[in-house]
Image (cartoon, rainbow, N blue to C red):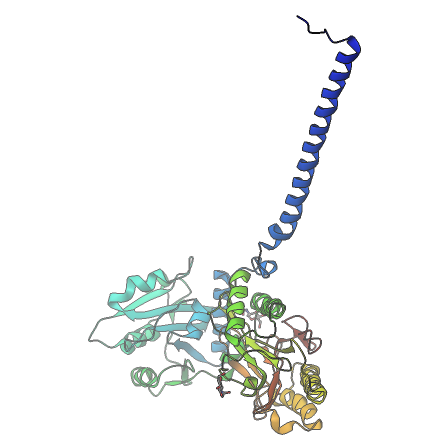
Length: 477
Ligand SMILES: *[C@@H]1O[C@H](CO)[C@@H](O)[C@H](O)[C@H]1NC(C)=O
Ligand SMILES: *[C@@H]1O[C@H](CO)[C@@H](O)[C@H](O)[C@H]1NC(C)=O
């Protein structure tokens, strides 16, 4: 009543208004959705990829590398047996330790109770080398020892009772005729052609491991030694088995070394002036954790400025200042194999132009020494000649007295192992498969220390740097 009915034109106008409003709201919603999507994409790209961590790119670095297989352990024993036959040794005996682990993968703690690996070797009538592996264990530990055997292995387990002699059990093992690798064969009697094993005219050797403790070696010599048999320390060639790495060991060492260099490079990008040595230690722990390698927290040398002048210094939790170089010496483990890498670099040069130039020159000298050593590496070269090649470069620049340690050491299941690259090691010639560190350094107490360390493999024709690329410059380690 009294209300005017809207005209058709007005109704039409209102409807168009509504449609326009709807359209605007709709467009706005679409715009927000698009923006949200774009933001999510960017977030995902940045954080989804990095996981918020500067070390995320290190994740899974060595996931593709398998541990040493049971077949390879068997091959190691076969290689050992061939040498034993060559040297007319009837057996090799080792205590728990790195060599037992190398041949059998068995890890066992040494104690006053002998626990012994006995590997016997001989040729059968067709000149095939046979191997028999026995573990001599305290009787009450037999089951625990059996659990340590790799799947598929058929080692004989021989026990000794508390109060009896482990060494006499070893003698029984050595004196029991045997036919082949199957421990069940040993009970068979009668087939004289195969089992025939009268003491030979020649004196037979029993090789004991170089790391064997004195009281165990003496016990074995007492029980086993006689006019026809001599107990002696395994010769250098046995040590060469572990020194010359297999293709698979090299693959492991390559990955653990390369990843360690990448860890240092990633940590370098996070270090700023004012950071403390302990903070950089924590970064190393975090980076290694993300890389997936086994690393003992705090297991690096992180040394700033003059703290680095002691090659194995502990540091002083020094705060990084401009003009101090950073030295990081570190290593981690993959499938039982170690890396060992050192980088020294600038985060920020100092105010003294002279000092900056001095440190740059020293850095370049160390790098040149490292390259000179590399160029000297080839099969047949003596270990001391590699040390000499590096030392000459450093001496020429007048820092001879400042290069206070050997050039390097072998690397594998142990952090320091043979071969050692020092001026006195004239006896060891390089052989393909040897892996060692190349780590010249120059140290001035109270001022600075600069060292560069990479891991090198001897190849058939020369060398390969297992740790990838050498440091490029004092700012690009
Ligand atoms: C066994 O010896 C051969 C020949 O020297 C070598 O190529 C191979 O890598 C050795 N095997 C292992 C598992 O070390
Ligand atoms: C270690 O650091 C402390 C405090 O920063 C300092 O007083 C001390 O002299 C330093 N020690 C060495 C050996 O540099």
